[in-house]
Image 1: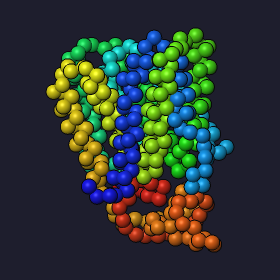
Image 2: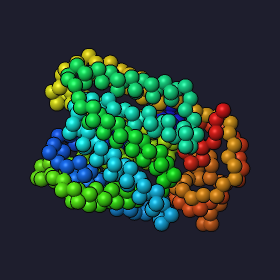
Image 3: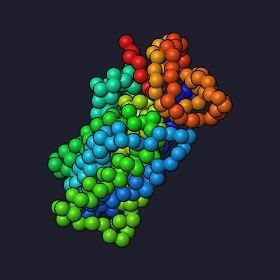
Length: 347
């Protein structure tokens, strides 16, 4: 596999998916008997811990006043509505059936990214998304073999995927900011809102082991995972990152299998092959062509050896750094993803 911008960003997206996927069956286990708003509050309190306090890495700009409105909307969608719907849905349906529906997040994200940002999604990406949906459908057959599930529970999980897909898509303009700053602001605000609603509605709270378990799930699966997701989105854009994140439900189903659920193992193997094919298509994608960079003034972390930043510093600056800088109009060709410099239209 060649080392391309898409491949490098894809590996980061896969790491984010694995961390999130591992926590899905754990949330069902530790959240048993816990109110959905209380579950969301504890998960995103853990996410704030996993984000780490905003720092000054490479001079990356942190969330500022002009981004607070977008962060508040993301907190409502991704840190309140989505986890509440998922927690309630997991309590009213089977874990494997829920894994099937979590694949809808990838489909919704690709469609929304295409509709809102006109991100390119060629035949290769379309085939990869189709394979991941098929892998989820196979898991659904496995769920059907185990037993029926509540329609309302499945509907709640589907609502969670739509909310997270909107979150994924609307997060793209924040991907060039300091990741821990974005995650911390979103997670802290979401935890406070969910805790207030939990107190107002009289939700039951987790105690002892369940509390620690949900906090750890939030730290790893929602805090660290989201930081990696934002890093991947810088290189890949919303559509490709969201598509690769569809690996997460399969990770959860695999963990359930390891824990002793051996029913319909042949279907799990088929699903694994479909997901593996989709991941291969993503990581081996080599998107490159002659394209135009219009004159642009913006700010983000960059290096002077990446082929796009040739402005001068006095004294000279080496390595990664951030400041407002001007780009002149340029025409050239090379491999690229949908990063901040390559959001041009195709076709």
